[in-house]
Image 1 (cartoon, rainbow, N blue to C red):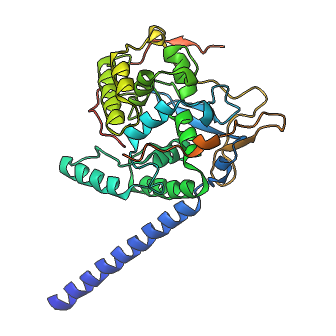
Image 2 (image 1 turned 120 degrees about the vertical axis):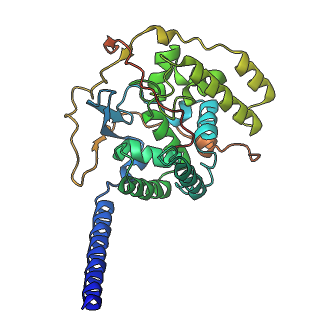
Image 3 (image 1 turned 180 degrees about the vertical axis):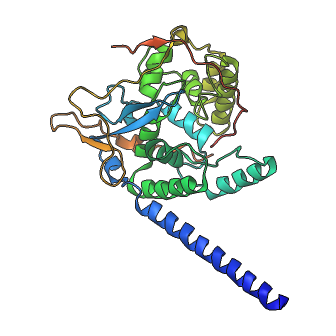
Length: 330
């Protein structure tokens, strides 16, 4: 009697596992089918409204595109900043197709050894997908969505467009979004006037503004910017003279004397409050015909590293949240 009973129980367990697997698979498929389209991102005159959260987890509307007065087109982004970001965040950016599977394998090994999520292996394209469309929760389904969106973005967008979008939405310090905001906030200048050292300084905060917080751990930010400069010099992204000049430069961080901004700039008055478009995507805003088009990209559009290799209200800075130094890329 025991034999048939055990066999019956075992069969029920297998059926339950199969049903759960099918349900999970169906959920993943439906989640992927409901992902927003990345096609609007290929149109330079289109702006979308997303929601970003401050350190108190309160949501704020944020305009991605030319309707944002701080938007910096690709041609106005200094080459040194593009190279610093690639060197520090995604060395294979110009060769992979949105996903770096080798980096993911290394991240899995590191996570396994530590017994927790310490590295994500995310490319710049994956980080952009997360910043635009996904949450920051560390779950398997979010990672799958991120991978799918990254592949779609790599198919639909040029590398220069991906880099332009990423550098305009990345958080570079507490509630400082995009390089147009960051360059004025920290250095009081337009992004195109940034020095090599200043570019490395901004790139050093990309893994996480809570860990690399210039208000609380300026020494940590400066040390990481030194490492980025070394990587750039080793990959011949900058000359030896540029490297030595950058190391000897002390950034003029006048912006640190001000308080951290707590509220984000709302969309222009004529816009409606941000709401999700049909299908779950962000709100899409088309610039009027008279809006000037984005400046021509020129030959710099597919720039790759050399083969060898009114003001917002001010509030006190948020308290530091201790966290371990992450590896890069995420």
